[in-house]
Amino acid sequence: MADNTLLNTGTGGDTIATDDVTTLNGSASSGVKVQRLKTGFGSDATYRDVSASYPLPVTQMATKVLTYEGRTATFRTPGRAGTTGQKLFSIHNATASTVIVDVNSVFVQTTCTVVKAVTVLPPAIRIYRVTVLPTNGTACVKTPKDTSLTSSSSLTILQDASADGTSSTTALTATLTTQMVLGCFGDRMISAVGTDLFTRYAFLSGTDEYITLRPLEGIVLTLDYTLATQNPITDMWIATCDWIEYTEVT
Image 1 (cartoon, rainbow, N blue to C red):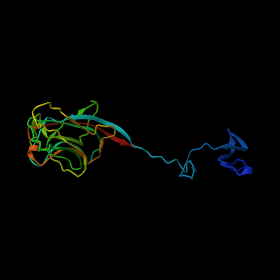
Image 2: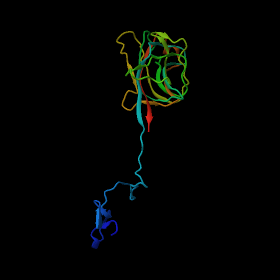
Image 3: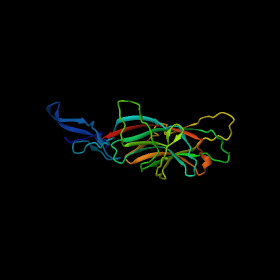
């Protein structure tokens, strides 16, 4: 018999997929058909049985193998006044790095001790994606969530303060791109009367908001402004960061 079975032969019904088998439960068989319950694939109106010659197409996803989970916080960082802005914090994965980094969150908080005129804008707080390794500044301390894990030396984290309230001897420097990831305005104190709310700016803090840093990739947290009065040395800033490091196995 041929494969496949025509239903309602006399009225031209549909054909169902069957196999004419010559072996059934280990014994020779003749004249027996079994309905196909097979895996197949194909575009609409096209079908092919899965076999050794035609395996089922699959998309293999890489598996993350965690190597480190860390957090860090900057010192209390004074504003730098000037007219060219300030780089507060950077995290960068080196070009030959064997790990991939997901930056899960960046938080920024500021407080002021001198009022600003209502006509003076506060700095724009922005995160830029970069490729060139930032320089100068002061290294941040990597604090592990699990002390049995060790951070990769390829991951460099810098800040613009050497101690609480003390600017780094040489300001943190970075070559910025036009790839601004996030931005907002900082707080400003326009009157010494009232309550300082200590706004905490949350970047990358939601589900799936992380930024992935592959080799030769990083981010820089900046204060963008053009007037010295927008970010005087009496303004103070603190940034914190949470990240993971991992390798991919396919």
